[in-house]
Length: 178
Image 1 (cartoon, rainbow, N blue to C red):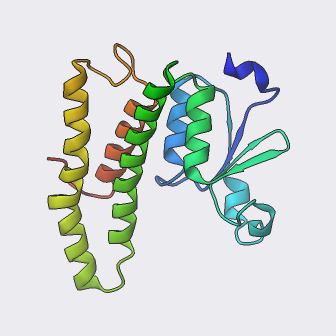
Image 2 (image 1 turned 180 degrees about the vertical axis):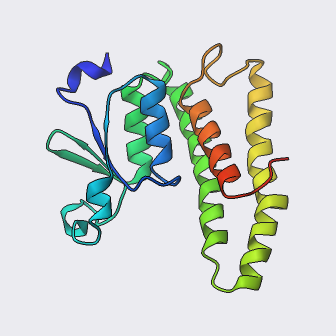
């Protein structure tokens, strides 16, 4: 049991927004892992910036250790939530799906922060009509090839939670799903 190593609940330091902090929250929740959501530290930004390992958020604090970088946080949360397969090759497959989902998120961020309004509208249109389907169609094909309902088989694993989180963020961004 991965939780036995935790003497106190982990603390996720991030703003309460639908962004990089959403997947760790969903993973911990799906695994029934108690955690603390610390948005007070995030809301005290930039005063708290120099206290963070890389000067950015999210950060996951476990006791006196801090894990930075959203990918590392997500993988750790998936592990302590017992949402990873036992087989290392299957873990790599789950990780690849989570990375593909991260690519979708990064494409949304790029569209959102495109500098000029005309270019931003074009970037969102390209995201909705090309990028999203290109990325998600490949995930759908992988799932269809498993013959299962979930990547985790009969129950969702971290890949399934990542897909849910990604599609949720896409919808929250106002993009219609095909």
